[in-house]
Length: 112
Image 1 (tube, rainbow, N blue to C red):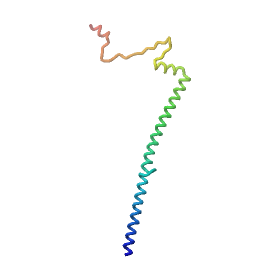
Image 2: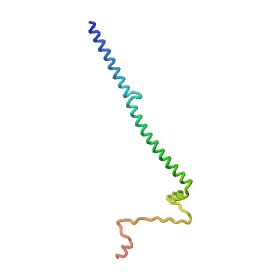
Image 3: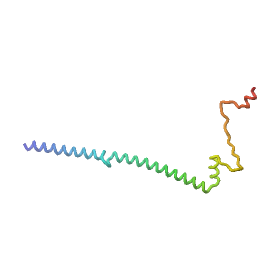
Image 4: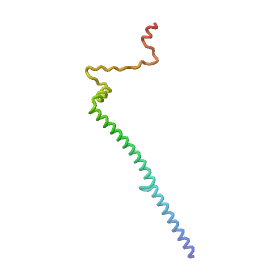
């Protein structure tokens, strides 16, 4: 009789230990601060660090451009020209490519 009670008690104890172990494993993976959440946070940190690095590079490029605009007159003039500005006595020529697939009108006139 005592053996049956001890066997039942052992079964209950082992079942409780098994359930507690499963609960601890579940919390380790899916709980707050668990393994899956940490992996997600690490991925998010990596994305944010790469974004920060690209913003730092953009900041350096803009700082370089601002310094050149302040210090270099030639750079300022070249930027102004790229936007179509010119000095009063300056003439800007824009060379266009001849469209392909059509003959030149001078060639058409000489063939007639």
